Length: 372
Image 1 (cartoon, rainbow, N blue to C red):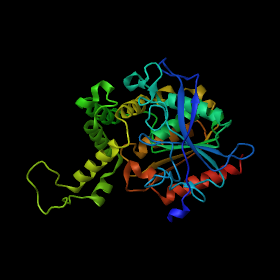
Image 2 (cartoon, rainbow, N blue to C red):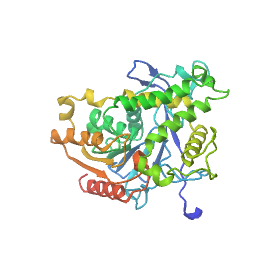
Image 3 (cartoon, helix red, strand yellow):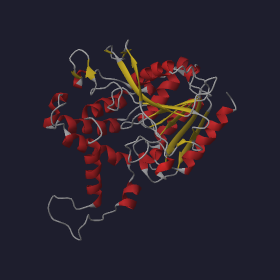
Image 4 (tube, rainbow, N blue to C red):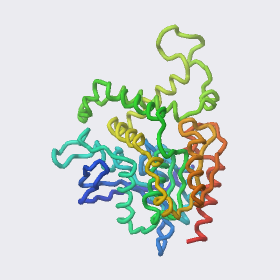
């Protein structure tokens, strides 16, 4: 893209002095929510689309900040003429609570101490994240979202919205997600958390202003990143190729390109993410259990239209697990379409440009315009 053609945006912040009551019984006050908007809200406020980000995402979903080296994390799908067309839709993306990109989280200042919360910040759930988004929705003057869209942890937020606030969600697109974690999925997150908490610099979460637990967070990211890629993608990109050498070193330095890649991913992640936030968000994902919370009464209230998407090579949230969402809705005669997209890139496929994903989301949203 020609730099002169870039559209620049800024992150905004909404502050709610009354705070937010959490599922744990604790409270965040004041509550801060960082968010961005793209496009224009129409006169009857019927074209609003909410984008929910994944674990390491932020409110910066599209377009450019002045200091960006690359655009927002879902810029491939949000913008003029794209799947989520900002010429037609008013698009909002907010940073979840518990994160480190502007919304209330462990990095925020505790008004009682004047210092970052650290582990004094209360544990949050996916439902808490959505309840915070409800406050933002009201703040923006939106009565009902035309569509709520998100992948992975964002998909959990989509499901929470649709099942708990069906009157506020005309349609929903959960992507590469699940109704509850399996033991294996919890296990991967548990190992990542242990890597952080066993780093001596973690200091029980009290490391702000000191040396952060970079090594532990880097290892946690490396573990997580392995689950985001597929075996096919790793073999295509790396196979067993050596890194800048022609034979094994017969020591414990980096031999393989895949080792170097994971090392880079870990090192780059610690420059932009907070270790405590990683603990909080992975715990929220593990706690999410829509499957155990479903009742006939809750399902009967749902009039939301669904487009459910999975990816063939995703082994973190495999197609069979995503399809369970569609089957549940279909069994209760809900308006649902399901598609498993053939793609080699594993769980991360939902973040990457894919023509089929673009066509499905674009067609789904444009059809909705004729119904509102």
